[in-house]
Length: 176
Image 1 (tube, one colour):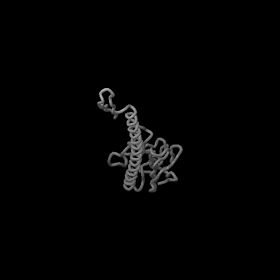
Image 2 (cartoon, helix red, strand yellow):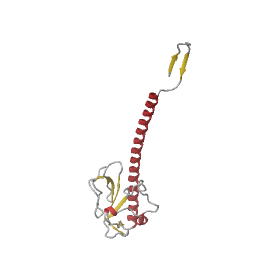
Image 3 (cartoon, helix red, strand yellow):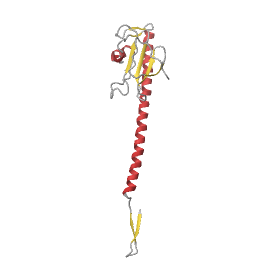
Image 4 (cartoon, one colour):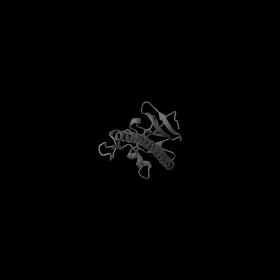
């Protein structure tokens, strides 16, 4: 705010308002704060989706263990190529009593999905497998997957390429 005194009348004339520089500084500060909040929020969303993935794979593990307990300790046979081993609707109907979850980002990016492979010799979903591996791609770390194995192991697996488990064998090394 600036105040000027007129020479001729000796009266004070007040001008209310902000200068252009003051407005630009405030707008810049607000923009910087908004960018920081947005970046922080996006990171938080990624972490939340990764946590959801871990929880979903744990639910799948529980469903698979329940399936095996009803079928003499055998898991559904799905021995397909790892890159095609998406947890399918057919497999889900074999062991989930309720609709099983899909990856939280799958509707936006199809590369985010849950994968399942077992040591069964057929791709029928029949109880013929003795071990399995489940995995999902994580967002918060590049080329990192969350892996859940029939032996009870679970953890992160870092790979420069898509992990390709064979015969339902667990990937290693897994880190917590």
